[in-house]
Each structure stands twice: as structure tokens, then as C-alpha cells.
Amino acid sequence: MLSFFIIIIMIAIFMGLYMLREGFANRVKRHALEFTDFPQGQQMRIFFISDIHKRRITDKLIGLIKEEIDAVVIGGDLAEQGVSFQQVEKNIKELKRLGPVYFVWGNNDYEVDYQILDALLLHLGVIILDNRAVQLEFEDGGKVMMLGVDDMNGRKDRLDQALKEADELGEGFRILISHNPRILYKLQEKDKIRLVLSGHTHGGQIRLFGWGLYRKGRIHEKNGVIQLISNGYGTTKIPLRLGAKAETHILTLKRREQ
Image (cartoon, rainbow, N blue to C red; front, side):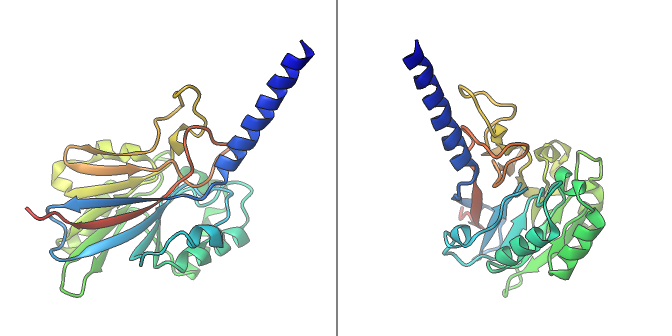
């Protein structure tokens, strides 16, 4: 009987160490996405990272990225209660080594003083997509619109405002960033959104026998819109993962030739 309990304890320790390692793993997943209406003869690379929470962006992660990045997109939950603004600043400076940084608010970002966080991000040159749209233009005139909505959990999202601003900017391939993936169900065909980038769910974070509070991160399509839902980079509550690997993403967007 004693040996049985020793075996159980050893298994528990092994599982705990494995889940802790998974909680701090560095992974970059690469996706090639083609669209019939992407600007002709162009491609765009986006580095997408969501749900950083208490994690630190390190040289180890940055070193995994060899490609030239056109835009770094933070999909919310850059911070949470207990994360210092010094750590946020360091994380942003690391990400800026890759390219210009865009940010949308997540629910946990409001656990810190959001006015200080907002001012810090602006000081660091981060483009905050809080119910806004911005336009990126290729040398030959092809355009991409980056739209972002504020935290849906706090009912701060105003998709209508972001779409209105996009309409005022003109035509272009439209990418929507929303921390909460449920934004997909607010979209209509007339909104002309082609790609949605989201996080929030952590893929369930800890999945037992394939079951978790949320589905694992994935790329799927609904009504002609492609959505990436990331497992996220960090963790919440406890620094453990099981069955929902920590991940970041490089998306290469280009035109599908018909």
C-alpha cells in the first residue's frame, strides 16, 4: 500500500512539473492564409500574441521568429492585477523589435489602472485599436484595414464605430481584432470583415480527457469569415497548462489566384 501511494505522489509531481513547463513554453505556430480579395501581388506577415498576462517576453521567443514581420498584434490581456507597468514596458519593447505594435483591450487589462496603461502604450508608440480602424498601404497602393474593438466582457465594444471609421478610410482588405472571439456572431456580410483574430479562452488552459471549459484554439470559417482563436501565451489564476499548449502565431496573408 505504501508503494502505491509513493507511485501516486510521483505521478502527481511529474504531472505538476509537466503542466508548469507547458505554462511557460515558447511556441510559434505558422499559418498561410489565402484570400481571393487580398491585394494583388502582395503578402503580409502578422505576429499575433494574446493573453500575455504575467508572462515575460524573452529573447527565447523573439529568437524563434526569423521572418520579417509587418505588424505585431496583441490580442488583449497584456496585463492583469499584479503585473507591473515596468514589466509591460519591457514586454512592449521586446515586441517592437519585430515591427509596429497594435493592441486591443482585454477584460483583464482593466484590472490595472487602465489610464496609466493607456498612457504608457501611447508613449511607447503602440497603436491602440479601441473601437477604431487604421489603414496600412502597400507601395503599389493596395490597402489593408486593421479594425479593433474594446473589451466585450465589459460591454465596451463598439463594432459600429470601428466599421464607420473603416468606411471613412475607404476600400481595403479588412482584419478585425477582438480579444473575445464571440465578436464573430455580431458580424454581417456587409461589414466585409475577412479575418478575425481573437484569444481570451486560453483553449481551456487545463483540459482533462479532452474536456475543458473552452474549446482548444483553432482556425475555423463561418459565413466566409476566417477566425483564429489562440490558446494564448500566458495563463490566468495558476501558471499551469494541460492539453492546451501556449502559443503565438505568424500569419502570412496573400491572394489566392483563381
